[in-house]
Length: 387
Image 1: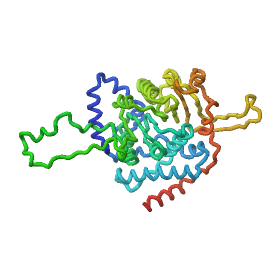
Image 2: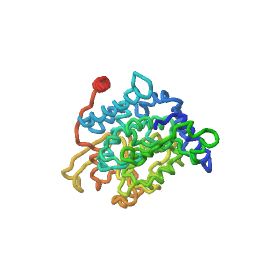
Image 3: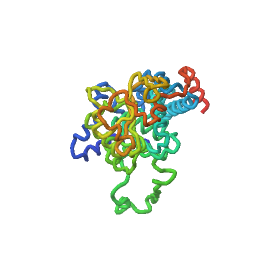
């Protein structure tokens, strides 16, 4: 279904009324966003247009370089994703001048590329705080995907994600913020005593939930339905939380990390690309450690490594400049957890060489081009004109 602001707020109001204490809702307030003047509420779909390209401004070239350039395959993925965003605006935002979010989509592509190299066989993924929601542009096309779930506390972002997931997943999308339409009473009561049975045609319904055509592949949860997510019965191969760990309230961060630890498969990974703006000087690594996670990779800025034998003889020097800090963590049950679960491992850079996929994901050897955005715009325009 297509969720609108009125439905979202009604569902949120009902949920708040049913909470045992107001402090649960307070935990998920967006203090950092509100102080920055970010539009956390939206009164119409038109209010979503200023969010189309946000939070990653002016990072396009940096992310391209970090990935080792755009190979033909990556360029094709990028252009398909940008085309989807343009079509979304034409369909829902009543505009003929579309915003082309190069930097924001490129950030999402970098997330997807790293996760795909770290866990190439992943079938299920949970994203905490997807923001614009653009990782779904790539997860929706991931071969073998069984479920992509996400949870969000910002109304405006949630509505944008809902539009996008409806566009990408169609009947395989389930919106958990929707107010339940089922009545607990007997629907036939409406006819008794007030209307004759022949005054209206009998209503016929058909349940399609669970059918192959309508199976739930994309699950979208608002903050007040975290208990439903916790009880969903799934274990996720990957859990990712990007550009937000430092921006949650301490209560929300603790809750989300506990949720992640519970829902992550034993051999799964917790991945982040950017921990977010550290507005209160918190030690996010301490929260990760106390939640039971062990780091396989932590890096920021410029990192140089020498690969070789124990004496570094005959090795090669590799270098990477990270656009934002990156991290990969695992929980108890993972075969590398015991060797990495020490507070001293939460330093930068940390690279667990027992996991060779880390080098492939973060120090790519494959070379591609640094594209000219003017050329990309022309290609995108031609693609939209021909559709």
